[in-house]
Amino acid sequence: MRSSRSQTGKKEKKSVPDNTKNTPVIEVTPLNSMPYVGPSMSGNNKANENAERKGGPSMILLPSEADAEFLNLVHQAKTGAVALTGSAALGKIGYTVGLIDIAESDDSYFFRVSLPGVSRDEKEFKCEIEPDGKIMITGITTTGEKTICRHNQVFKMITQNSCPPGHFTISFQLPGPVSCDDFNGNFGSDGVLEGLVKKLYYED
Image (cartoon, rainbow, N blue to C red; front, side, top):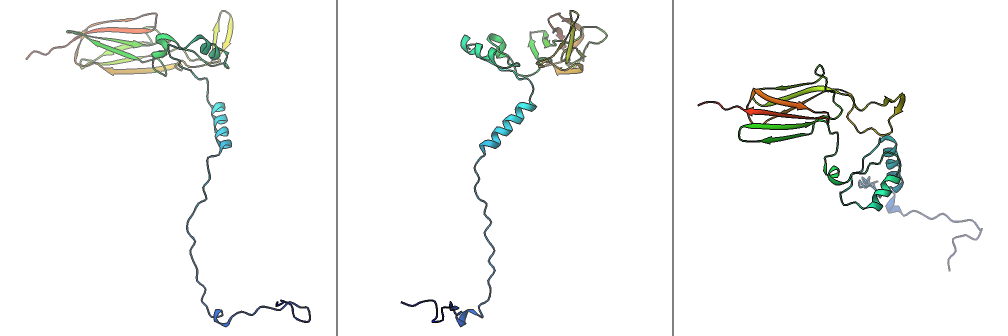
């Protein structure tokens, strides 16, 4: 058996073959590759925590068939949870100001506009009708403030889902031309504006 040491006990140097001294160096460009990194659970948790910090009060929409046990869990949740049942759970998500219903009969158009928290003062509220059937509503919302003074007390808002206070404009188009002189409107205390306007027929 050959030993790598000489008789003097020193390690011998291995000789390099002559045919490798003049071999050119070849530069090889490495392949572009990226190691697979799966989704980080800790990153998702941090994102959720940041969303909870940034996000304000939220609304939970429940179906009308929600049982009492489930509703109790919602009421026991932290401040900001709202439980909706019955027909209220079938409404649209978002601010209720500006929701519009339009109906039609043989000779008239009827429209209903949701305007909760809107001032009914004639100096601040206006509903204009143009002959082509365009309706323009302008006014001021009084809800959405951060503090409320009632009954000699100051209340600070915990949840805020109402439309912010300030000026607004709502415009929509009726299906056809109308007679601006034949308009009857009523802005009730329930925050709903109802309007009835006659259709305009042009003579041939």
